Amino acid sequence: MNYRNHAKIKLNHPTLCRGDFYLNCGDGWYQLIDEMLTEIEKVRGQLMPRLAYIEPNKGRMKAVVDGMNAEIQDIIDAYEYRSQRICEGCGGKGQPRSGWIMAACNDCR
Image 1 (cartoon, rainbow, N blue to C red):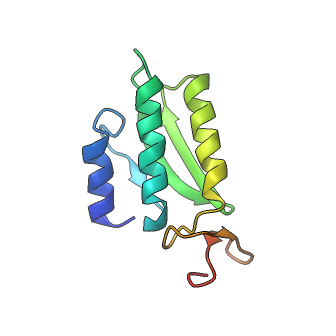
Image 2 (image 1 turned 180 degrees about the horizontal axis):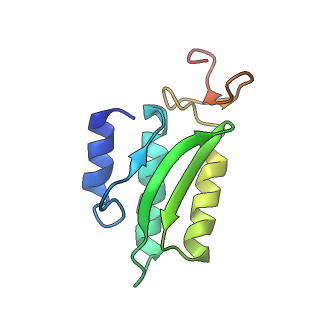
């Protein structure tokens, strides 16, 4: 993810993105990640979860959050599933592609 989007995620979610965290994915997932973190913040209650990293894994997003509960894990699972249909490069409609597996649209593959 480019520096600008990485910085916006940190500014939008300072509680979840405290300390070091890594967004090793394309800018096409920016909106998806922002929405996921917003949902996590709504349900975290007294917990202090912290985003460790997000990266592509076999054509879908893999998000690792420290200090979470089952409700937060369910949110992460739902967004990881959704990521399979979003192009990691541009954010358009995508699908898992063969070769180096990534979620991509026809233009970005």
